[in-house]
Length: 410
View 1 (tube, one colour):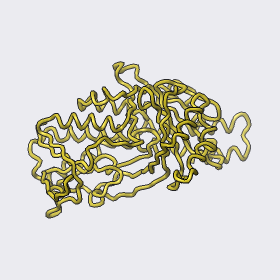
View 2 (cartoon, helix red, strand yellow):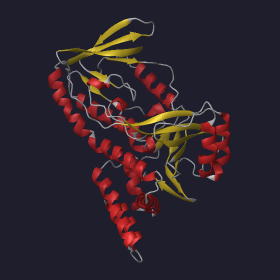
View 3 (tube, helix red, strand yellow):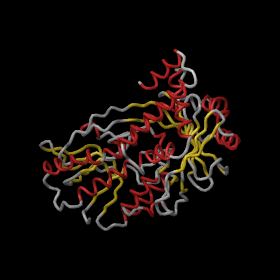
View 4 (cartoon, one colour):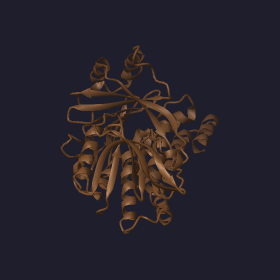
């Protein structure tokens, strides 16, 4: 739109992260809307066409419903840092965008309106930058969001990350989800020669990497549960020792509408990364904001702009609430539990998705961001529960089975 934009980033070197590596097809469509689809080119990104689910030796493949889209439309998986660098290059190529490395230390507030930021440059100078609209997107560890929202951060689990080299997944170009004990294990390609493995460890404490506890846990508890085709590569990756950990955060969006500022990305809203929906929600939010700002020529009336941008929170809901709710619910269902009703629900979910047809394309189109409709999500939740109850009550309902069935519905 030709507006002048000053981007202040903490570190402009290539990030090295173990999350933000999977972009759902719905997110790729948003990338196209923003004219940024070439950011996944030339980084050895891999097309992703669906998921494979594994449980107790059984496996099922769930394909994205891409029949009505161009052949280029699919999910993408890649090294997060390479993708970020491509987006930075794209931004820096625009004459109206100034990219600068610096650490924002505080928001500048005057008469309850954010006027800009105070930041420290790479060489240690303290500077200020002023703008009619400050977009705060400083990630999951945000130290600026406290004045712009009510942050209720939950950490249900941690991811332990590994890279498997020169091995082939059972289903090429698919994400793999193993319904393991105690919680899921993920595998997906991040380049033509590398497979990312993320092992979910419930709670906020993980075995120590330094004293060898983690390697022992991965070899004795996790390795026996991975598909046999990649067992040797998994053990080799553990032996190589480049083991990383990352807390999985969840935070509902509860903003304080503030004149002059807007929260975006993980600083604003997070969900469990099991379903790989974070970038799809963020890119969808950017499209919503872009479309709202497009007709405005002047952003200087902060109170009026703030009132106008309140519609952003309504317009983002179909995509954000569908993906957020599904991520939280699937994580709970996919985790092992000694509770009989939870066990039944986990099995019912696996068997329901294994039925194929509408039973798999419906949920997978929700997860992929291709059909962000909360009502469809509710219908599939009920369908899984009723399917589970039906299996319990047939052929002969017993009092125990009726009780478990009642708990499934509740």
